[in-house]
Amino acid sequence: MDIAAFTGSTAAIGYGLAAIGPGIGVGLVFSAYIQSTARQPESSRLTLPYVWIGFAVIEALALLGIAFGFIWQGQGL
Amino acid sequence: MTGQSIVLAADIPFPPSVEDFYLPSILPWGAHDNYWFTKLTALVWLTTALIIIFFLVSYRKPQLVPTKKQWLAESVYGFVRNNIAVEMIGPAGVRFAPYLTTLFTFILLNNFWGIVPLVQISPNSHIAFPAFLAIISYLMFIIVGIRHHGVVKYFKTALIPPAPWFILPLLIPIEFFSNFLVRPFSLAVRLFANMFAGHMLLLVFTLGGFAMLNANAWFLPFSLLSWVLTIALTFLEFLVICLQAYVFTVLTASYVQGALADEH
Image 1 (tube, rainbow over the protein chains, first blue to last red):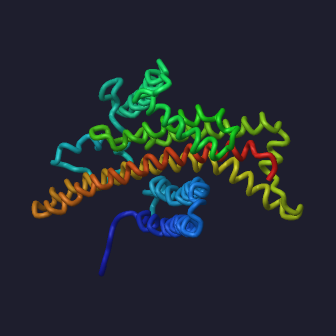
Image 2 (image 1 turned 90 degrees about the vertical axis):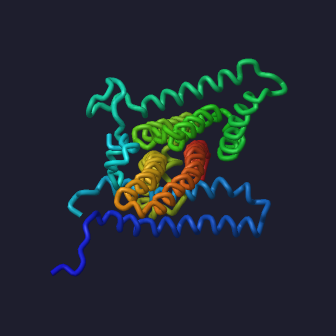
Image 3 (image 1 turned 180 degrees about the vertical axis):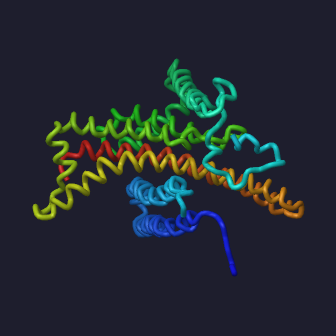
Protein backbone atom coordinates (compact mmCIF):
# COMPACT_ATOMS: atom_id res chain seq x y z
CA MET A 1 0.00 0.00 0.00
CA ASP A 2 1.26 3.42 -0.89
CA ILE A 3 1.23 5.82 2.03
CA ALA A 4 2.30 8.71 -0.11
CA ALA A 5 3.14 8.97 -3.75
CA PHE A 6 4.05 11.76 -6.04
CA THR A 7 4.70 12.12 -9.69
CA GLY A 8 6.89 14.58 -11.50
CA SER A 9 10.55 15.18 -12.07
CA THR A 10 13.21 15.01 -9.38
CA ALA A 11 15.01 17.67 -11.42
CA ALA A 12 13.05 20.26 -9.45
CA ILE A 13 14.54 19.01 -6.16
CA GLY A 14 17.92 18.75 -7.79
CA TYR A 15 17.78 22.34 -8.92
CA GLY A 16 16.78 23.46 -5.45
CA LEU A 17 19.87 21.74 -4.07
CA ALA A 18 22.04 23.12 -6.86
CA ALA A 19 20.96 26.67 -6.07
CA ILE A 20 22.24 26.50 -2.48
CA GLY A 21 25.90 26.89 -3.36
CA PRO A 22 25.56 29.86 -5.75
CA GLY A 23 23.13 31.42 -3.26
CA ILE A 24 25.77 31.36 -0.54
CA GLY A 25 28.40 32.51 -3.02
CA VAL A 26 26.43 35.50 -4.26
CA GLY A 27 25.67 36.43 -0.66
CA LEU A 28 29.37 36.37 0.16
CA VAL A 29 30.24 38.57 -2.83
CA PHE A 30 27.79 41.30 -1.85
CA SER A 31 28.58 41.04 1.86
CA ALA A 32 32.25 41.54 1.07
CA TYR A 33 31.42 44.52 -1.12
CA ILE A 34 29.20 46.13 1.51
CA GLN A 35 31.83 45.59 4.19
CA SER A 36 34.65 46.98 2.12
CA THR A 37 32.55 50.00 1.13
CA ALA A 38 31.60 50.63 4.74
CA ARG A 39 35.23 50.51 5.81
CA GLN A 40 36.55 52.52 2.90
CA PRO A 41 33.78 54.38 1.08
CA GLU A 42 36.14 55.89 -1.49
CA SER A 43 36.97 52.41 -2.82
CA SER A 44 33.37 51.70 -3.83
CA ARG A 45 33.78 52.59 -7.50
CA LEU A 46 37.09 50.77 -7.70
CA THR A 47 35.70 47.44 -6.55
CA LEU A 48 32.34 47.58 -8.33
CA PRO A 49 33.41 45.93 -11.64
CA TYR A 50 34.95 43.06 -9.70
CA VAL A 51 31.72 42.67 -7.77
CA TRP A 52 29.82 42.17 -11.01
CA ILE A 53 32.42 39.84 -12.48
CA GLY A 54 32.45 37.72 -9.33
CA PHE A 55 28.67 37.77 -9.18
CA ALA A 56 28.41 36.70 -12.82
CA VAL A 57 30.90 33.87 -12.45
CA ILE A 58 29.14 32.49 -9.37
CA GLU A 59 25.68 32.97 -10.82
CA ALA A 60 26.72 30.93 -13.86
CA LEU A 61 26.66 27.82 -11.65
CA ALA A 62 23.02 28.32 -10.74
CA LEU A 63 22.17 29.01 -14.38
CA LEU A 64 23.95 25.85 -15.51
CA GLY A 65 21.63 24.10 -13.07
CA ILE A 66 18.58 25.51 -14.87
CA ALA A 67 19.92 24.62 -18.30
CA PHE A 68 20.92 21.06 -17.38
CA GLY A 69 17.67 20.53 -15.53
CA PHE A 70 15.88 20.94 -18.84
CA ILE A 71 18.48 19.05 -20.85
CA TRP A 72 18.35 15.97 -18.63
CA GLN A 73 14.66 16.03 -17.87
CA GLY A 74 12.70 12.97 -18.85
CA GLN A 75 15.71 10.68 -18.88
CA GLY A 76 14.15 8.17 -16.54
CA LEU A 77 14.69 10.18 -13.37
CA MET B 1 2.71 26.58 -30.36
CA THR B 2 1.18 26.13 -26.96
CA GLY B 3 2.34 29.57 -25.90
CA GLN B 4 0.00 31.18 -28.39
CA SER B 5 -3.07 29.96 -26.54
CA ILE B 6 -2.61 32.29 -23.58
CA VAL B 7 -5.69 34.32 -24.43
CA LEU B 8 -7.87 31.23 -24.77
CA ALA B 9 -8.51 30.67 -21.10
CA ALA B 10 -10.26 27.37 -21.79
CA ASP B 11 -7.34 24.98 -22.00
CA ILE B 12 -4.23 26.39 -20.38
CA PRO B 13 -1.15 24.20 -20.65
CA PHE B 14 0.41 24.19 -17.24
CA PRO B 15 3.24 24.05 -16.25
CA PRO B 16 4.95 25.81 -19.19
CA SER B 17 7.67 23.82 -20.92
CA VAL B 18 10.47 24.24 -23.41
CA GLU B 19 7.86 23.85 -26.15
CA ASP B 20 6.64 27.36 -25.33
CA PHE B 21 9.86 28.76 -26.74
CA TYR B 22 9.24 27.39 -30.22
CA LEU B 23 7.10 30.07 -31.76
CA PRO B 24 5.01 29.49 -34.87
CA SER B 25 6.57 30.14 -38.23
CA ILE B 26 5.84 33.49 -39.89
CA LEU B 27 7.41 32.79 -43.29
CA PRO B 28 5.96 30.45 -44.58
CA TRP B 29 2.94 31.38 -42.51
CA GLY B 30 1.81 28.72 -40.05
CA ALA B 31 4.16 25.99 -41.27
CA HIS B 32 4.86 23.24 -38.77
CA ASP B 33 8.37 22.44 -37.55
CA ASN B 34 9.81 25.31 -39.51
CA TYR B 35 11.81 27.77 -37.44
CA TRP B 36 13.69 29.77 -40.06
CA PHE B 37 11.62 32.92 -39.70
CA THR B 38 9.70 33.34 -36.47
CA LYS B 39 8.96 36.26 -34.16
CA LEU B 40 12.49 35.89 -32.78
CA THR B 41 14.10 36.36 -36.19
CA ALA B 42 11.94 39.41 -36.79
CA LEU B 43 12.91 40.83 -33.40
CA VAL B 44 16.63 40.42 -34.03
CA TRP B 45 16.33 42.23 -37.37
CA LEU B 46 14.22 44.91 -35.75
CA THR B 47 16.80 45.37 -32.97
CA THR B 48 19.61 45.69 -35.47
CA ALA B 49 17.67 48.20 -37.55
CA LEU B 50 16.68 50.24 -34.50
CA ILE B 51 20.25 50.49 -33.24
CA ILE B 52 21.68 51.44 -36.62
CA ILE B 53 18.98 54.03 -37.29
CA PHE B 54 19.18 55.47 -33.78
CA PHE B 55 22.93 56.01 -33.87
CA LEU B 56 22.90 57.28 -37.47
CA VAL B 57 20.07 59.74 -36.88
CA SER B 58 21.36 61.02 -33.56
CA TYR B 59 24.82 61.65 -34.97
CA ARG B 60 23.85 63.03 -38.36
CA LYS B 61 24.40 66.67 -37.50
CA PRO B 62 26.56 66.65 -34.37
CA GLN B 63 26.26 69.88 -32.40
CA LEU B 64 28.54 71.34 -29.79
CA VAL B 65 25.57 71.68 -27.47
CA PRO B 66 23.98 68.26 -27.92
CA THR B 67 20.34 67.83 -28.81
CA LYS B 68 18.27 65.42 -26.74
CA LYS B 69 18.82 62.49 -29.11
CA GLN B 70 22.50 63.20 -29.45
CA TRP B 71 22.80 63.44 -25.69
CA LEU B 72 21.22 60.00 -25.26
CA ALA B 73 23.47 58.37 -27.84
CA GLU B 74 26.53 60.08 -26.40
CA SER B 75 25.72 59.06 -22.87
CA VAL B 76 25.26 55.42 -23.87
CA TYR B 77 28.57 55.48 -25.70
CA GLY B 78 30.22 57.46 -22.91
CA PHE B 79 28.98 55.01 -20.31
CA VAL B 80 30.44 52.03 -22.13
CA ARG B 81 33.65 53.83 -22.98
CA ASN B 82 34.38 55.29 -19.57
CA ASN B 83 32.77 52.84 -17.17
CA ILE B 84 33.50 49.61 -19.00
CA ALA B 85 36.23 49.95 -21.63
CA VAL B 86 38.59 52.40 -19.93
CA GLU B 87 37.92 51.15 -16.43
CA MET B 88 38.56 47.50 -17.29
CA ILE B 89 41.20 47.72 -20.01
CA GLY B 90 42.86 51.05 -19.24
CA PRO B 91 43.65 53.83 -21.73
CA ALA B 92 44.16 51.22 -24.47
CA GLY B 93 40.51 50.31 -24.08
CA VAL B 94 39.22 53.30 -26.05
CA ARG B 95 39.75 51.47 -29.34
CA PHE B 96 37.48 48.65 -28.13
CA ALA B 97 34.73 51.04 -27.07
CA PRO B 98 32.81 50.94 -30.41
CA TYR B 99 32.59 47.16 -30.37
CA LEU B 100 31.66 47.07 -26.69
CA THR B 101 28.98 49.72 -27.21
CA THR B 102 27.50 47.75 -30.11
CA LEU B 103 27.55 44.61 -27.99
CA PHE B 104 25.98 46.36 -25.03
CA THR B 105 23.16 48.03 -26.95
CA PHE B 106 22.46 44.90 -29.01
CA ILE B 107 22.17 42.67 -25.95
CA LEU B 108 20.24 45.28 -23.98
CA LEU B 109 17.65 45.82 -26.68
CA ASN B 110 17.35 42.13 -27.50
CA ASN B 111 16.86 41.32 -23.83
CA PHE B 112 14.41 44.16 -23.47
CA TRP B 113 11.92 42.46 -25.80
CA GLY B 114 11.43 40.01 -22.96
CA ILE B 115 9.38 42.52 -20.99
CA VAL B 116 7.80 44.66 -23.70
CA PRO B 117 4.04 44.03 -23.39
CA LEU B 118 2.60 41.91 -26.21
CA VAL B 119 6.08 40.90 -27.38
CA GLN B 120 7.39 39.37 -24.18
CA ILE B 121 9.99 37.01 -25.47
CA SER B 122 13.64 37.75 -25.86
CA PRO B 123 15.57 36.34 -28.82
CA ASN B 124 18.35 35.68 -26.33
CA SER B 125 16.20 33.00 -24.73
CA HIS B 126 17.36 30.74 -27.56
CA ILE B 127 20.96 29.69 -27.09
CA ALA B 128 21.88 30.36 -30.74
CA PHE B 129 22.06 34.15 -30.36
CA PRO B 130 24.09 34.29 -27.10
CA ALA B 131 26.31 31.50 -28.40
CA PHE B 132 27.17 33.49 -31.49
CA LEU B 133 27.88 36.64 -29.47
CA ALA B 134 30.11 34.59 -27.18
CA ILE B 135 32.00 33.13 -30.17
CA ILE B 136 32.66 36.65 -31.48
CA SER B 137 34.00 37.78 -28.09
CA TYR B 138 36.04 34.58 -27.77
CA LEU B 139 37.69 34.96 -31.17
CA MET B 140 38.23 38.66 -30.51
CA PHE B 141 40.16 38.28 -27.27
CA ILE B 142 42.33 35.49 -28.69
CA ILE B 143 43.10 37.46 -31.88
CA VAL B 144 43.79 40.63 -29.89
CA GLY B 145 46.15 38.69 -27.63
CA ILE B 146 47.97 37.09 -30.56
CA ARG B 147 48.35 40.41 -32.36
CA HIS B 148 49.65 42.06 -29.21
CA HIS B 149 52.09 39.35 -28.09
CA GLY B 150 52.62 37.00 -31.01
CA VAL B 151 51.35 33.43 -31.00
CA VAL B 152 53.93 31.75 -28.78
CA LYS B 153 54.16 34.48 -26.18
CA TYR B 154 50.40 34.90 -25.99
CA PHE B 155 49.73 31.26 -25.26
CA LYS B 156 52.68 31.25 -22.87
CA THR B 157 51.27 34.13 -20.82
CA ALA B 158 47.75 32.73 -21.03
CA LEU B 159 48.61 29.18 -20.04
CA ILE B 160 51.71 29.28 -17.84
CA PRO B 161 51.21 31.16 -14.58
CA PRO B 162 54.25 32.11 -12.54
CA ALA B 163 54.50 29.12 -10.23
CA PRO B 164 57.09 26.51 -9.21
CA TRP B 165 57.77 24.00 -12.01
CA PHE B 166 56.42 20.98 -10.17
CA ILE B 167 52.92 22.43 -9.87
CA LEU B 168 52.73 23.42 -13.56
CA PRO B 169 51.46 20.03 -14.86
CA LEU B 170 48.43 20.66 -12.68
CA LEU B 171 48.03 24.37 -13.41
CA ILE B 172 48.38 24.37 -17.20
CA PRO B 173 45.35 22.11 -17.84
CA ILE B 174 43.32 24.15 -15.35
CA GLU B 175 44.29 27.41 -17.03
CA PHE B 176 43.51 25.96 -20.45
CA PHE B 177 40.16 24.70 -19.26
CA SER B 178 39.16 27.97 -17.62
CA ASN B 179 40.55 30.36 -20.24
CA PHE B 180 39.71 28.62 -23.49
CA LEU B 181 36.86 26.24 -22.77
CA VAL B 182 34.77 27.61 -19.92
CA ARG B 183 34.89 31.29 -20.92
CA PRO B 184 32.88 31.20 -24.16
CA PHE B 185 30.59 28.51 -22.79
CA SER B 186 29.74 30.36 -19.58
CA LEU B 187 29.37 33.66 -21.45
CA ALA B 188 26.74 32.12 -23.72
CA VAL B 189 24.95 30.06 -21.11
CA ARG B 190 24.74 32.92 -18.62
CA LEU B 191 22.88 35.22 -20.98
CA PHE B 192 20.75 32.43 -22.43
CA ALA B 193 19.75 30.94 -19.08
CA ASN B 194 18.89 34.31 -17.58
CA MET B 195 16.54 35.17 -20.42
CA PHE B 196 15.16 31.63 -20.54
CA ALA B 197 14.50 31.54 -16.81
CA GLY B 198 13.00 35.02 -16.88
CA HIS B 199 10.53 34.10 -19.61
CA MET B 200 9.70 30.85 -17.81
CA LEU B 201 9.08 32.71 -14.56
CA LEU B 202 6.68 35.15 -16.20
CA LEU B 203 4.91 32.25 -17.94
CA VAL B 204 4.53 30.32 -14.68
CA PHE B 205 2.92 33.26 -12.92
CA THR B 206 0.68 34.32 -15.81
CA LEU B 207 -0.48 30.84 -16.78
CA GLY B 208 -0.62 29.79 -13.14
CA GLY B 209 -3.26 32.43 -12.54
CA PHE B 210 -5.38 31.00 -15.35
CA ALA B 211 -4.77 27.44 -14.22
CA MET B 212 -5.96 28.21 -10.69
CA LEU B 213 -9.00 30.07 -12.00
CA ASN B 214 -9.88 27.11 -14.21
CA ALA B 215 -9.52 24.69 -11.34
CA ASN B 216 -11.94 26.52 -9.06
CA ALA B 217 -13.65 29.91 -9.35
CA TRP B 218 -13.01 30.52 -5.63
CA PHE B 219 -9.31 30.77 -6.42
CA LEU B 220 -9.86 34.16 -8.08
CA PRO B 221 -8.00 36.12 -5.34
CA PHE B 222 -4.98 33.86 -5.74
CA SER B 223 -5.11 34.30 -9.50
CA LEU B 224 -5.16 38.06 -9.03
CA LEU B 225 -2.21 37.82 -6.64
CA SER B 226 -0.37 35.74 -9.22
CA TRP B 227 -0.97 38.36 -11.92
CA VAL B 228 0.11 41.19 -9.62
CA LEU B 229 3.28 39.23 -8.95
CA THR B 230 3.78 38.94 -12.70
CA ILE B 231 3.95 42.72 -12.86
CA ALA B 232 6.38 42.83 -9.95
CA LEU B 233 8.51 40.16 -11.59
CA THR B 234 8.54 42.19 -14.79
CA PHE B 235 10.33 44.94 -12.90
CA LEU B 236 12.75 42.39 -11.47
CA GLU B 237 13.28 41.16 -15.00
CA PHE B 238 14.12 44.70 -16.10
CA LEU B 239 16.90 44.71 -13.52
CA VAL B 240 18.19 41.35 -14.79
CA ILE B 241 18.06 42.56 -18.40
CA CYS B 242 20.25 45.60 -17.73
CA LEU B 243 22.55 43.60 -15.48
CA GLN B 244 23.13 40.84 -18.03
CA ALA B 245 23.88 43.29 -20.83
CA TYR B 246 26.36 45.00 -18.50
CA VAL B 247 27.90 41.74 -17.29
CA PHE B 248 28.38 40.36 -20.80
CA THR B 249 30.14 43.56 -21.87
CA VAL B 250 32.25 43.79 -18.72
CA LEU B 251 33.36 40.18 -19.03
CA THR B 252 34.28 40.65 -22.68
CA ALA B 253 36.29 43.73 -21.69
CA SER B 254 37.98 41.84 -18.89
CA TYR B 255 38.95 38.99 -21.22
CA VAL B 256 40.42 41.49 -23.67
CA GLN B 257 42.28 43.08 -20.77
CA GLY B 258 43.64 39.64 -19.81
CA ALA B 259 44.79 39.09 -23.37
CA LEU B 260 46.55 42.47 -23.47
CA ALA B 261 48.14 42.17 -19.99
CA ASP B 262 51.89 41.85 -20.23
CA GLU B 263 52.98 39.53 -17.46
CA HIS B 264 51.19 38.16 -14.48
